[in-house]
Image 1 (tube, each protein chain N blue to C red):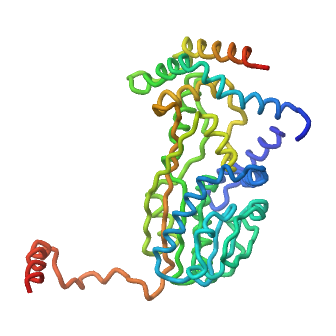
Image 2: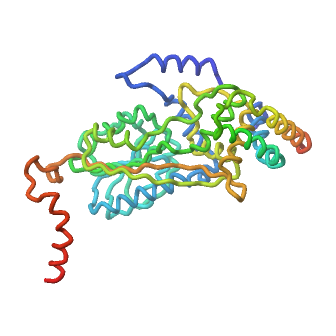
Image 3: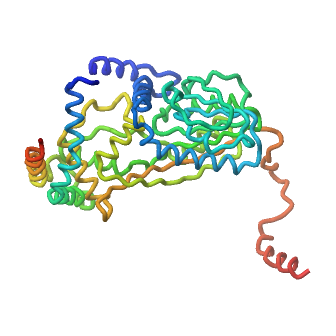
Length: 323
Length: 70
């Protein structure tokens, strides 16, 4: 591996500030990690998290009582959502991802689908094409570039189209983060970030609102997975293609630090049976592209009931029941 | 990746890591407790604050590795 090439690239990354947004992640490294992960023979072993999130996002699609003639799955990986969706809800599906080997190894689904190799930040579709956009963006994505992704999604959606997505939230892998931090502090005297920054719930609402989405709902879910130890957590993350790809990542982790972090992880967060938990906090969001048919807040001053009447509501209910 | 190079060798060594760590669970727990106590106490965690426990853990780990290597 060329450490000199990487440091050159990181210099370039730090100096290029496009539109004032920081370039935090190295997308070419991320693509390589994803290609490697999907080319593993036992890559199915690492799909459990994405499958779980995929089924929960698909549940939310069913909650919307509409049929979607054309849907798009951004960053689909091996297409974890399509197998939970049925042809009556989604009639045609486009799958896009940054790595072509994941698309090649994708799961079968009954919906007629087309695959497009595309980067999430540059969606090659015309405006106002899709009725539904789905995405599971795990911590891979540039959280600083996420505004760009959301704006792109907003553009390709038809008016009154809906975007249902899932991102990884701020509390994810906090056990791993804290253990590594404490170990590095104790062993080396300082610490470097090994886990990329995640989106906070509040940021998500702002992001979607600024991109122009209406009627937002964001809810949080936590998935806790138990592992035998810290190294299994890290190797599973690597197998999922989620290794660190930030420009400022340290190229090495000392053996002593790994040992220390594993001991700390087990001691601070271990369960009674000897396993250690890893928390994945997933934020689900639903946003609608504005359309005249959608309910809008009414004009100020047009109220015809007063909040003071709330106290009389229970009396009103009783009279209704009696009559 | 059929030839043995430094990456495949070091990955093979890393795979043994969890088993070796399991053999030193006492020392690991002592080290973990030492570090965890600093998070609740008033003092900040500085370098080598728990160096005694860590050296015990490391020597146990290394002797387990020497014993365990086939």
